[in-house]
Length: 310
Image 1 (tube, rainbow, N blue to C red):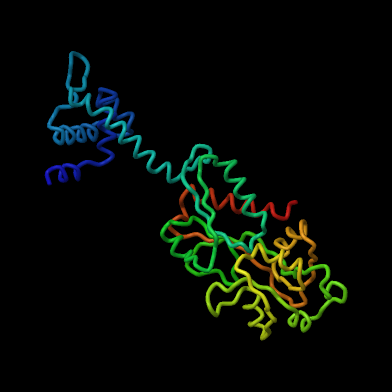
Image 2 (cartoon, rainbow, N blue to C red; image 1 turned 135 degrees about the horizontal axis):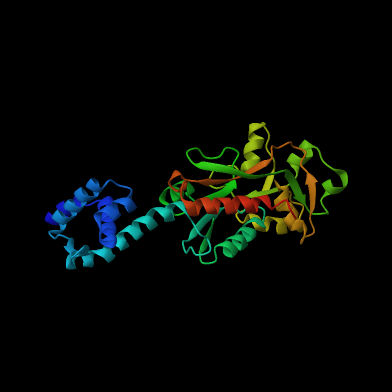
């Protein structure tokens, strides 16, 4: 209890006065260095002497010298001041070249397939010593809780209505198009809304029983429904399934264009006028002001800006 009482009487200002007086070996010079009036420094020194039970600084001839106790306190005082400075400067500054903290990102696989590879390259080039953990934004993801607990730094995905209670920033918009095999009849004859609705569609597996994806949710709002005859939990595998069937995949143009580069696929306009898919990054208030997570969000935004710049 005595030690706790003693600790309660010590503040960082006293430690700073202690270190400056012992270093300068003069109350007047310490006052100038601290930007304080000399009586205030003298009063602080009296408090320090009382706390230490030692004079700390004594006269020796025409000069002042630290006592043995004062000499022993100089380095610990310097360490405390350096640690305190680092405590707050680390929170306000982030140097990616030397940082070693881990970044955790939860991302939807509906994204442009080049987005996450580009982001990983950028992060490893700029912050080479920072491990990066990319997690799937799946049906089991409770990302709001993960953000609140600090388990995830940012979440990247698309929502018709972004979740409330989180910070968010728009990354990019993507036009809704249809991906089909070149053998699909619509490639030759075109299609209208009714023909599109009656085509065989493939869609991602719902996040939970009864849930609808972005496309079906918007169709329901229009009083329409399409014929979904196949579902797949692995969104990035759907283009391969479309390439060898008459299934129709409806998604963002960026996503579809990437697969057209390596698979026999054709992009068709969607006869239903959907609003663009809007992709966001989300983060929690707990990390809003952090220098490291601000740097991460800037990196995410900068990579998103490159997606159209081929």
